[in-house]
Amino acid sequence: MIPSRRDLLKALAGAPMLFAPQRPAAVTTVNGVVFGVETFSFHDLPPAGDLQLIPTIVKNLQTLGIAECEIMSGHIEPFASVMTGWWVQSRRSPDFARLREEARQWRLTVPMTYYRDIQRRFEDAGLRIYLYNVNFNETFTDAERDRTFEAARELGAEGFSSSTVLSESRRLVPFVQKHKMFVAMHNHNNLADPDQFATPASFETALAMSPLFYVTLDIGHFTAGNNDAVAFIRQHHDRIINIHVRDRKRNNGPNRPFGQGDTPIADVLRLIRDNRYPIRCYLEYEYGSFRPAVDEVKTCFDYCRRVLAS
Amino acid sequence: MTAMVGLKRVRWYVFLAAVVPIFTIGLGLDARQERDAGGFKAPTAALERGRAVYVLNHCHFCHGVDLTRATMGAANLSQSPFVGTDEDGNMIGPLVKAGLPNLQTAMPSYMELTSEEIVDLARYIHFLRQQARFRELSRLADSPAGDRTAGEAYFNGAANCRSCHSVTGDLAGIGLKYDTPKLRERLLRPGPTMPSEGVSPTAGQAAHLKLLENYTAANVQDLIAYLGASR
Image: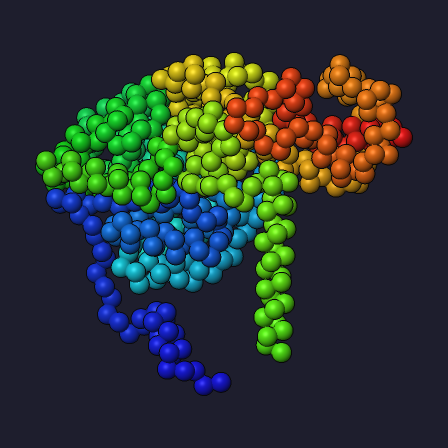
């Protein structure tokens, strides 16, 4: 059947622009401060592997007017992130060994065009995956670590943000050197386990392991662990890739709407603005709400804009 | 011809429109319920207060809006024996207030919750558990059948059914009265399908709801084998 003129136009509109000149990477700035979104913020996304997952993330970023993101591996790979071994509790499941092996085999065999297609979808929408969020852990094989670095490159990411641990960081040293790609360690606030990233000392131990190790400082978790985010940024600004902007109460307190917790969001944003630190600020929405996630991320972004305007 | 196809389609949609709500009400999933980012709106004002505590303290991000899709290594509260022992927050409250700071990704401490909020939260969690357990257990297959002896032991022992019921008294011949699917449904939910505004469950209904939260699949199959033999 000969396609109609309308069909032809539709097909052309949906096709990748093979001959278009490469666009410069989009950047969203507010008074000189670069903003992005950690895709964990979008709590109401379709499940892993759903064909609408990536289009929904793209649409959400466009709605927000934010050009770049740190994308979770669970939003790229077609299986739940519990299958990748990060949460020690999830490893106790009787099905874990089988599910983990399935995830491993997928990673080792998926063609790299899978990742490149996702990168193009972002690029075609004027967006960018700046960081690939993969939680490296002891259940990864070396072959899997290699493939994950290759995947990040195909996604167009500059490097990784990773909720990893110190013992795994040591294993990652030869991989960052081989692939010439950085890993930024992300903290939580477990102060009892010395292998976790939760204190200035834990970050400093990792930073000494490799010049390609950096920090994704989650200022909310850092505050919940009773640390001083402003002091840490002043001291280590040249090794911080991005911060996760959220507001938590001290003493392992809960997440709160921006401005209602103990996290010094305003002080941190102004510190970055006034010193022109090249630290990207990634919104992470995790307080509760009855509204859609994208609406709340917008509220978080509006708060940051107001802070930076003053 | 086209008109015939159109008529058949209309009939099919009319059939669906009539059947789907009946089916979903039976499962406790009323299609008419309003939904938002925190799940389905609760059927009573008290439960809706509990839902507000649950959602606004972002419990649902880790434990799921219906308790069954736990993420990030969080406990599946619909299956948790710890939650099953709770009465109006006496177990849940202290844990929620203290948090679990030593977990890999710590559960926050919710020190600021009031006693009233803890009770509302706990009752909402129990309500969600009952909904989730009913959905799960009502889908059990008829075979393999349970163990009649184990059912009798559970009836007279851990479940303490005998404090109100007897297969030679009020339940005599119940195996003749109901087939297996109906017996399972009556066992899981002998009272109203959903709580109603201003209507408190009777002591018996409350006891059945408590049992519903804590049944294992084997408990249900064994009880059905035992009760079904009463002919």
